[in-house]
Length: 242
Image (cartoon, rainbow, N blue to C red):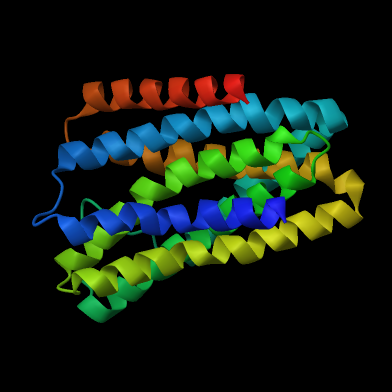
């Protein structure tokens, strides 16, 4: 039940971030979008390097950690090749509205699969607080992501309420994948270190390949760097009090 509640709250944080669009009259500037992306990257960096990787090392050692990280990166690489990447901020693709919106929704939904798996696997680990910690980290990352998706959809002339609902639904898949990750690793305990390191590899790929480059694309490198460090410190603080 704790795992289910944690995964639901983590997934619904996407909608919590998107909820902001119902109360604002204009889109965020590139500067604020970059800040949100970089802050999310800092949160995820701390969660993966201080939360997931040490736990995977303790439970399985360096070999299983390396294998899990490799397959996490490989999985995200495969997803990226199958789903065309569309930059939420720098829209330069000459495709029609309907196709563009569907690609965005599909890309973000698939992007959330490894995040849900990481939450479920973390709850299946032998360290009680790991699950809550990773669910919190993913939730922090999901909120600005939900806002950015909703803003993109609004810019494509979708109504605010419909954009809010669609952005929220992109995070719903995390509930299903959390359950899959939890039960799979619960029944096969030897998979836990591989699952944790798989999640770490997937998160590191997202950080370095997506969040950091996109947050540095509009001349906001310095403020984005500050936001990244702030996000990392916030997550370290939360890890410490947990």
